Image (tube, rainbow, N blue to C red; front, side):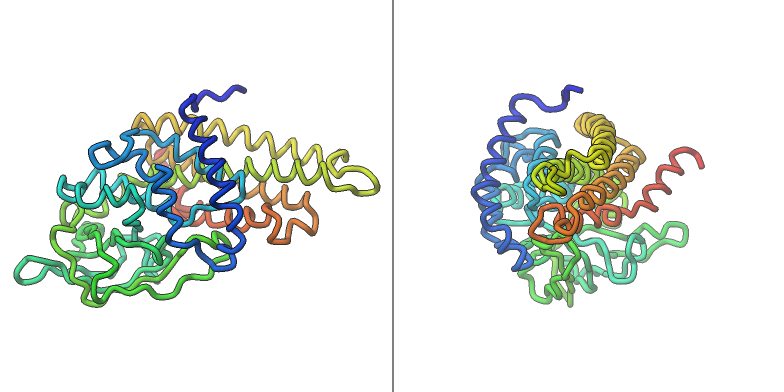
Length: 385
């Protein structure tokens, strides 16, 4: 079926991005994998390319295009090349919406121009050791000083994507105790300067996949955060987090769908070139049936993400619809990538083959942004169950 979500300007961006990946990413990617992260300087190149500023209003140095479709193309093209842009997806897909919707004019003037250029990279710190998906259970605190000029931040966070290279981190912290009838009350969002005294980056986590994404543990010991860096209103942070969850979860869904598409292409190419008993692996009926089944699942996932993409751009994507898209697409990607790896035989288990990287990178999709089990709870609740 003909796809209608992308138009000429989107396809022009795709060509530009594909050329950028071929010259600025693929030749160096093996070294980045070995290093466990990409160089900080790479984000300046993304800034020059313009990817950080697409959704930023023109008055702050961006293009002012209110659409997720350009980010969607980036997911497709990085998956196609079996590469990643590290923590930049958090910078744009997760952090930018908070700044745009909650930031004061002074904050936007201060933060968005360097956001666009890559001079100031953002990350967001929600998860804490021992709390997992239970954000209301966080224990990191931010107490207002006696003179009211700053907060004093204490606590720790973990699984923070982009945490090593970040220049500013949106930290979720308790500025007040929870209420007896509302344990979500009392959480605020503070935009913390990573150069502040008492702020420290702990371990860079050694993950199964997403090797070039710098995921770290953070700790705060009496970090002074100016009150001018409070994002939104005090004690309303939990509701703010919920407002951006549909886009966050849809971005994971779209990334998973893109990985599934790439996996089928990798398997098609490999099975056509690989000879067994004097014949291409693709000539055997089992191979054809497996790839056909994978393609059918990818087609279904494409219908889901295209519909959700249009809804997101129209600001109509509900939390339950985003959860449904994430659940379906991440489970499809899991099945498809596994079957495509199987078609590679033993070489599918070798990291130099892109299918192996996809297999490892894909696994976290059913965990972060809310586990598949949490997605089912959200969907069931929306069903009135």
